[in-house]
Length: 81
Image (cartoon, rainbow, N blue to C red):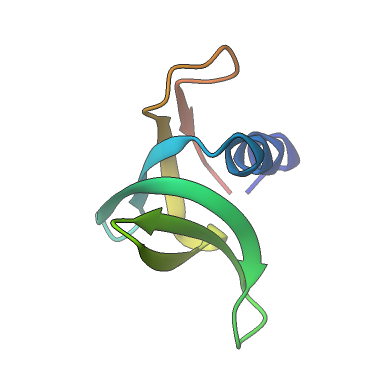
């Protein structure tokens, strides 16, 4: 993930944007961006919260980020490592 993508992701976490993220495996997840954390394997992950449940998705697995919260920063980001 390039630095500018991480910057947009951090902004989404700060603002609490609702995102739809798609992984390289073809899975899609929706939730509010909460934080970028490190998991037990020291892998950097996006923490999404949906219906009071937290989900950690490794940043290296992300391929697309779509902001469902209207904003002036980004709509869809295609993440190519």
